[in-house]
Amino acid sequence: MADINRFTRAGATRARAVVHGGRVYTVATSPVKSASMEVQTRAALEQLDLHLAEAGSHKSRLLTVTVYITDMACKPDMNRAWDAWVDIGNPPQRACIGAMLEGDDLIELVAVAAVLED
Amino acid sequence: MADINRFTRAGATRARAVVHGGRVYTVATSPVKSASMEVQTRAALEQLDLHLAEAGSHKSRLLTVTVYITDMACKPDMNRAWDAWVDIGNPPQRACIGAMLEGDDLIELVAVAAVLED
Amino acid sequence: MADINRFTRAGATRARAVVHGGRVYTVATSPVKSASMEVQTRAALEQLDLHLAEAGSHKSRLLTVTVYITDMACKPDMNRAWDAWVDIGNPPQRACIGAMLEGDDLIELVAVAAVLED
Image 1 (cartoon, each protein chain N blue to C red):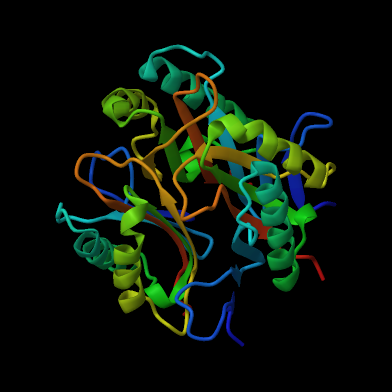
Image 2 (spheres, chains in turn red, brown, cyan; image 1 turned 180 degrees about the vertical axis):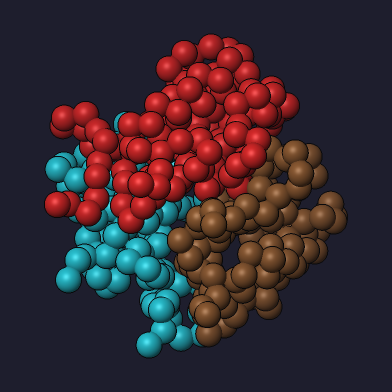
């Protein structure tokens, strides 16, 4: 059995999630290209939930998340969505970095989580 | 016993360090919001030392560090503090990225380290 | 035997690759400071290949890659080089982030890969 499990579309040149050695590496953006940071953050976090579930993990198992946002002035809006979403008993280490993203993306999440235990 | 160990304040929505599977994920900024990149770097590295110690690791066990700085023109100042601090026999892989950070932060460090062996 | 294997020049304050627990952490930029994003991406990916080989891994074992580029308008050029290079049966999770880089660098790659199995 392969020791690396990749979640990807046929023919794609990148994967939305990769599992190896008990950890999942994943990325998420908002499918909704709203002009609101809070709306995009909520949608990106829902996307992250889907990727984690598909790969056998859950937000309660997150280890580290890097949050890239295009406008640091909107960090409070991102935080509001994050604080409502996070598993308060199991918060990951997080860094929030201001960067340029593609097209109308306002936020991109890059995460590492432990897979669920048997 | 939980397989994930989180170092965080009560009620916080993120952790300063998370340990899983022999590795610690951590982040550090400078508690001193000095206008000097070198001063902030020194203080952020001291903060990183504290987080690593608390989580059962040490700078000699660092695997990878991403250094985000707000002004690439100040990279030599960051490097000066880094070079004085790093365990010269055990340097991590490092990337230095120019990005926007919160408030008066000039530098943010995101690191993965191996925990100390028994 | 040390449980961390560092690939670095004597006296250097950072490593080009670090291996621990079956994974390699590495970074690559283009040795050629061309003004073309596609040319720099090709050269940075070749550099990544070298670092992975040296550390006992291969692009088919990549787990996650963060691609930092200085101009998001050039992302299609980066993608062209990436798509030609990637192991299509084994794509990693990838994030592409717009950021400032040093000097004439247009691209920097930060990657984690599984080492080759015995």
